[in-house]
Length: 209
Image (cartoon, rainbow, N blue to C red; front, side):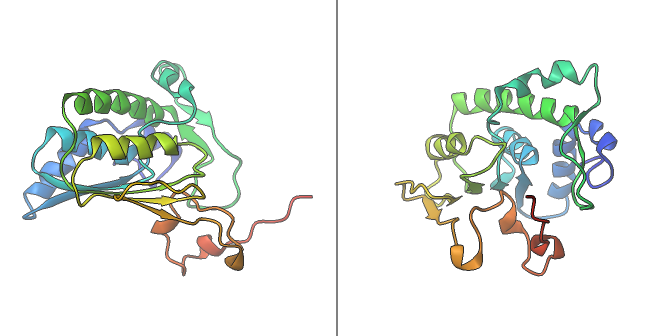
């Protein structure tokens, strides 16, 4: 996506049409197309998959089908006046931004509305692997689980649910996220994507007294 991995201000550039453009390029190069994404990009590819039958399946990590904070729907208004919003203080981690592009939040809100419209017409019946942490601080994890069970109907679908709650569904694999023997209390939403050799997955934060 335009701006990804550069600087927060560049994240004002992406549009929902970017996903379709890159999917067309991918279609020309391969025999089968699977799309994947994290958070907002996960919902962008899901919306496209409901509209384009060439997509064979989806890989969704912390899909932002519904943030916990309902105020996100106001982002499309706010981004007309402010390009960026404060997010979290810098911690000298070059893999994280210290501001949030409101354009991304607005894009997510519009995509959630579009996905609702598409799934109200018909469920998505192609294979999906989804991964979510019960303790995600931004995304409504329970809402993601409910949507997966109701609207993603392929029999081989799997949702990997990291948390304390056990979900009784054959297509949901509930995995414990409290591993005190490894000094782990909860799982990060994207921890499954990090190698154990990644230095930032091992980084020790200072104790705050």
